[in-house]
Image 1 (cartoon, helix red, strand yellow):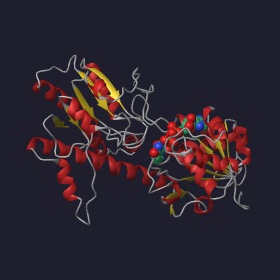
Image 2 (cartoon, protein in one colour):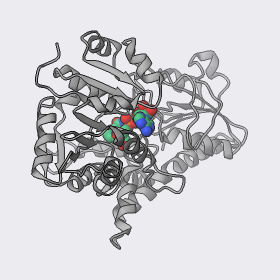
Image 3 (cartoon, helix red, strand yellow):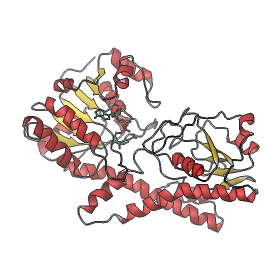
Length: 429
Ligand SMILES: NC(=O)c1ccc[n+]([C@@H]2O[C@H](COP(=O)([O-])OP(=O)(O)OC[C@H]3O[C@@H](n4cnc5c(N)ncnc54)[C@H](O)[C@@H]3O)[C@@H](O)[C@H]2O)c1
């Protein structure tokens, strides 16, 4: 049943972040109204059906049946909620600058239905200052209501890790920041009723910076692992063996692993939100730039290793048939946003290779902002492999028969250590 005394929560943007968040509030007894501009999402939810691999239909259906979860494209219903949380995308523009358009549109679409006493929280990852400098003026302009006098405004970074069963949404500590004690209390009370631990911080800007710092920390450390990989390659050392042994140190070390380049909605993008904002303060974020440079060069490195491996077999890359194994940006998920596989496919295309891909979780390559491949996943059988000159392991999905690939193909380029210790026809990259 819906718990008495709990406010109704509105969640705007029902994607990888908004849907699990909505369910977390429902499971804590809240009534949740989800809002999305894509009508397919409310339609699927009304039928108790999922559209994300990482969220089971049964979890949705239980909340719809209990009358706690509903979803709509009709923003007038914002007038009926007590707290409103924005979980909309924050990508980069073609010029690799923050694209605020989703946040701005959401604020504009919901502002007319703002009411006194309401709590509005931004969860999208963004540069420090966004809540105060972008969201607040739009909300205040619509009806003359003032933030933190007539309604509360807060920022709470999303730390969702899709597919991570150990840390479900409610178990991940929730950082919350607001610019007045009353707004902070309202936000802490809301999240405290659904999350196991809330971590209050002193301002929206601090909370915004926390999230970008976390993601920059990952980007920089992955870049360092990638650089060490390149050096190990030259020195004839196995970087994975080095990291495995280093990780036995019980303090002061945290393992990060090299790969074919960064992927996903967050790590390749978020640090550049900070770089952009830092310019306003005459500050250059050198670690971020260097990490970006190294991580961006990785797909090129992979293709060069492939070119070298093929040359050793007396075959040019031009005209070679190459199978890319895995296009999702990480193992066992179906999300291919910003995946390095896309860059590798486009480099192969540019080099005149004939590329195909296999990914058990991505049956067709959807069109993205940058790429429009007309490709579908090819089956992985002894017969289908016969047509290929080489494979490149980009994502280490568990459901791929790597041994079969290594038996059938003259060359396999391994970026994920799926062949620990290597092999006769294995080239690491
Ligand atoms: N995916 C993650 O693992 C993750 C983790 C932490 C933080 N984040 C951050 O959370 C935010 C959302 O990311 P996501 O992965 O959930 O994105 P997503 O693309 O999966 O979902 C966004 C949803 O918002 C909807 N939408 C777009 N414009 C809208 C509008 N004007 N009004 C209402 N709905 C709108 C889209 O239709 C979509 O359903 C981003 O800022 C992202 O950086 C994502």
